[in-house]
Image (cartoon, rainbow, N blue to C red; front, side, top):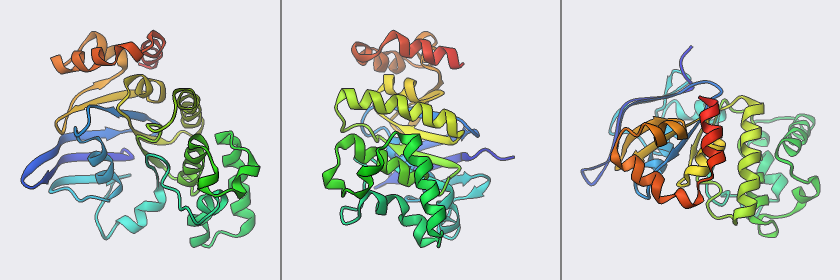
Length: 257
């Protein structure tokens, strides 16, 4: 069986400058890979190539063995869920309307939609009464839970998250980190989780891929990166975040290896 996410010899350039160069990257079934790095390192570009919002200038992106191309993208999108920063909800739809939109477009009967929404409410710890509200009437954390429900509505194999918690206050962010980890463990999805926060990457992910200038410098657990850095920049990057990096995060990351 092919891995759910595969990149081979992928390059993306802007104005002739390489923004991303990935010789090979795979994310196996039921694995959460957190991608971290400084601003402009190529994290979001990587995610957008995987979901087909961008086309590589060279190389191939595959989802479950199927190359991601303009002609294959419509068939692959239902197999992928996507969550962006601040949720990206449609403001003219209620929370319920946002969550069920894709299922309605695919002709799911009402009973099936309602059963799936009930499952997702329990999974995300979202109060049912909030489904009647519009995005502007929800808190940041509630909007992100709705965005996650929307991404999971069609029960996709692959879930992509682009810094979904960046705009939240620390307490809400901490709660959502734990809830995301619990949800991914329970669902067994293949997840690519982009963040600039190493502690968050270690909490949510099984492994971390640290990027710089479009390249993946090292992949492994937080303990691997801390104790066996592949490049001096790895140590510098971890050191810059040390003030907010709890020892427990490193311990959890090491325990998963």
